[in-house]
Image (cartoon, rainbow, N blue to C red; front, side, top):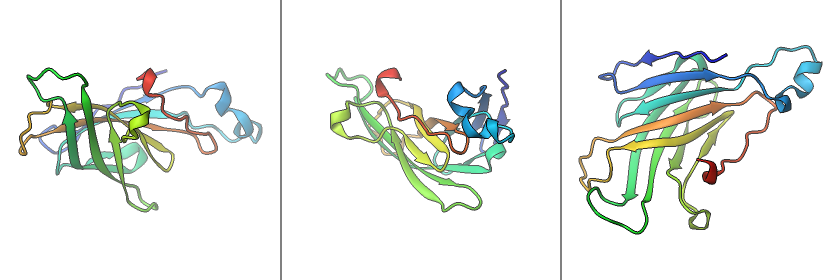
Length: 165
């Protein structure tokens, strides 16, 4: 069963949070099912961030802020042999946890060792989209769309596979 919850946050409608629940897979039932404790299904949220406007995923008590953008993608209107790479730096906080700065980026060949996905506790962050394209202007008003997925305690978080994105 998938539930969709849209929450408009108070910054000119720039931030939204979407949640999708999914049933636990066979690998998540392990010891928790035998102990009689209920499992919390992994969740996925999608948020859109603008600089200076933190977003809150209320159901997780998680706050995410876009701190900076490094846009080395091929400029708009230019033909390039490679699309380039973009990365965003986020500040992530949750009550009871140390605030952390993480960097997530667009897909790039593994040998380049560029930022891709990042983790914070039971959460995995992935850059879905960065808009607008590279305008090469220092005043570009970027909007970063980020997916945030959770896992059940004790369940391992799969490593990201850029070839599947």
